[in-house]
Image (tube, rainbow, N blue to C red; front, side, top):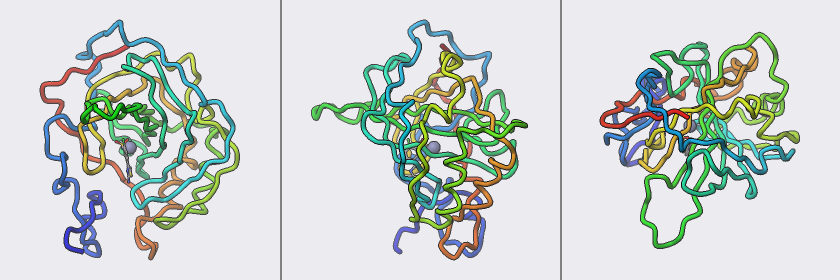
Amino acid sequence: DAESHWCYDIQAMNPQYSCQGPDHWGGDCQKSHQSPIDIITNKTRLDHSLGDFSFSGYDKKQRRTVQNNGHSVMVSLESGVEINGGGLATHYRATQLHLHWSEKVDKGSEHSLDGQHFAMEMHIVHEKEMSLKEENPKDKIAVLAFLVEEGNELNEGFWPLVEALDLVPKPNMSTTMEPSSIMDLLPKKEKLRHYFRYQGSLTTPNCDETVVWTVFKEHIQLHKDQILAFSQKLYYDKERSMRMTDNVRPLQDLGDRLVYTS
Ligand SMILES: Nc1nc(-c2ccc(Cl)c(S(N)(=O)=O)c2)cs1
Ligand SMILES: [Zn+2]
């Protein structure tokens, strides 16, 4: 096709692929308030307005659609799943959650903390209720980011998602997960009061600079076998010639931005 599709470095490096790696992504991807970033924790600023989040619909057990969209595995979230508080301007409606990962347990997260990457990163994407007259505000999207590290116990809450991976190996395949709640995937609620906050972008094209980011300090623990399932069961292509792994955008410059902490 005229303008080849966007992809990650691991795909662009493969001669079989003619796709545009991160250095060639278009849209706003080459601008200066991009994501992900390395968060240098001792340079973050305490912001007392960063209060607790209130989550609604997060504990609702639901059968949800899981799909392989060629870049990640994505769970569609229905209306009624919302967040409020957390220093956000208003309430936001969840639309989807997806993950980024590697088979190397220290290279799969998009954000890093003091230069350290983690095994995976889960993003819960929310959109602000938009009144028509508002142009593209910088906080149109709120993403809740959870770093995932290898733990030695199986994470029971993740089984419905991990088991669904077998059914969506190729792009554009989708299935329905066994009933599960978003809360099942997260660290304990009382641990979610500590987080970092900064202004950035989507980490996938067109990299719109309309995302208010929340990176939680408490990590999700997943067993190694559950982490490896993502790279072992999913493929970037329908020929299943390339496993889906390292779907991680390189770190972007913080530039003139500050990172705040609750
Ligand atoms: N086709 C795809 N879109 C995404 C996506 C969409 C919206 C958002 Cl906000 C993000 S991210 N990584 O910035 O959270 C990713 C992934 S794969
Ligand atoms: Zn993401």
